[in-house]
View 1: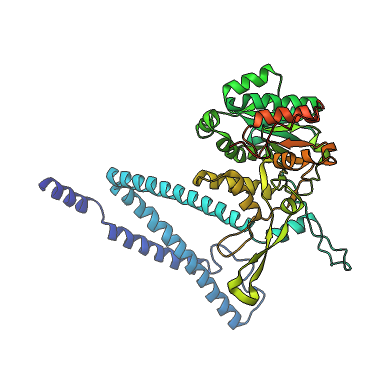
View 2 (view 1 turned 30 degrees about the horizontal axis):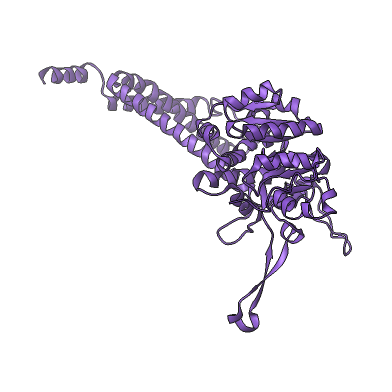
Length: 461
């Protein structure tokens, strides 16, 4: 304590205090200001824009000029005073600043810098969310404006709505390796894509043999395990193996048909982002013609139906009867059998990508059948608490893109329909898939008219 008191006394006796320094600076500034006001009535720094003219000789003008000069000098005096105070006081501040205080300030600065970075990240996240929210507003109007000028409605019967959404701008940065493969395989930016693991190796072989026989060049197998990749390479079949992804690979290696089917919605997204239209195909399908010669390409999604006649495939008015309602006992309902999620053509549009995202998200969060979710997202309309998907869709011709129920229950028993040659036959309704696939080849390709006879309309169990 004695040492600290001695130091304080020495400082107070040996050098002027902070207050005396400031008082001296103010006094010097006032004195200099007065001297300058007397010696330089026009000011130290002449104003060229607002000073009164020297050519005026009246006393009033001379007085105004003097007052104006004094005002200017007072402003200059204030500036001089401030500078002197700062010059006198700054050494005192520098000498009194301790290293401890410096460290505290540095720590506070680092903390504030970190908070600033966190705030910047929050701002970026909120900005991104805002942009995403804005994308959903007036989407239809914005798309229309982008496609063309607004027009008046024409005469009765001539008005047609937009059916085909514009494709996205390709983004090769999403998957450069896949982009290079697709450049070699695709024809006119479209191709057939199938997912396969070693559980379906026999069906996969029959699948690509018939594709090759028809002469379809643009097809690709997405291998879900090493065995299928090696098998495709040895058979000179275009193959793509994704980069390691444990979430997908674990299902791909050991998953059954339904589990593997759920993966396709996540995997197909990259194909669409790269700007390619995809004809997604299960491997329990026999190709008899080139499907690309029979597509309309006027919708976001073009899919084969699980329906087995015109009503079920293309839609009908189903009347619900409730006798207890009396006069209002009959309620009309619109019905259509579901689209088959194992064979559909999808264009690279925003509604298509949104469809894949919605289905993949739901399948990741809940145990559901991918085909049911696929159709719910396509068909459920907007209603309170839910915004429906604004995607255009087309049902494929059920006799050209034929499911196995149509074939075994109807076509094989009709003399006229037996003469048809479908584009594909999908053995989706029956469990003994491989045997029926070979029978389809014998019937339509090898001409064995009795090849389909041994099989029942449905399954044996």
